[in-house]
Amino acid sequence: MIEVSDFKKGLCIVYKDAPMMIVNVTFSTPTARGGNTIAKTKLRNLLTGQLISDSIRSGTKFDEADVEQRPVSYLYADETHYHFMDSASYEQFPLTAEELGDQVPYLIDGLEGIRARLIDGRVVGVELPLSVVLTVTETDPSIKGATAQAQLKRALTETGLEVQVPSYLEIGERIKVDTRDGHFLERAKE
Image (cartoon, rainbow, N blue to C red; front, side, top):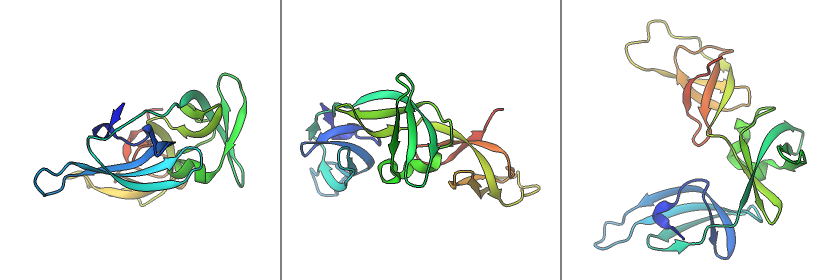
């Protein structure tokens, strides 16, 4: 059983008799005496793709969704789908941008370390590695003498993802980006 206090992004639970994945969760405590903590959640139905927003009081318990995971790699994208391959069986399967949601800007050809989520043998989504390495394709020139305090600037990556990076980074450099929230982690080690 999973309690509301254990909610985090990516967790799969059974909610309203359907397998759901937590897309976003924030906790708030009412100011009234004895008020329970409330989790404001955004859930994605893993079977239909429908997004649901709901507030859930702490103390409520949920069953974990019966979701199988398999290692896969990302192959390529065409006009309508993103194609993946099961690392064990070499079977390929497509997912749409709607099914992938905010994961699309982290996908680069040949990306490995991805895990497919399956319910009853059907792929319903993927889980990305915690970080990916992307190339900076557009950014302002580096700022000379800006080392007194950390300054950030906007950078655009090869996938179209916009990231705030340190001022010393330049076009063509490879950076490691966190796939959970899209922030810059470090320069990629070659």
